[in-house]
Length: 84
Image (tube, rainbow, N blue to C red; front, side, top):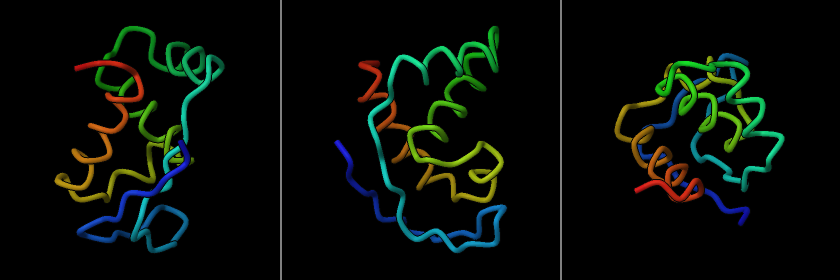
């Protein structure tokens, strides 16, 4: 699965790039290990890191994303992870 989610509200990432769509990739075991290492006891932070890795971004890039768009991307992350 390498698809894209169009954003309703494009935003400017930390790099200065305008983001109008998010490319999604499947996560690998190495991603899961990195997520748990970066935020071992914080489920919210783990999710943010996981979403960022799935999108090929860093968590700081997502700070300016509209909440509605983040929820759509977050739902895709939850689907990838098999979480309802």
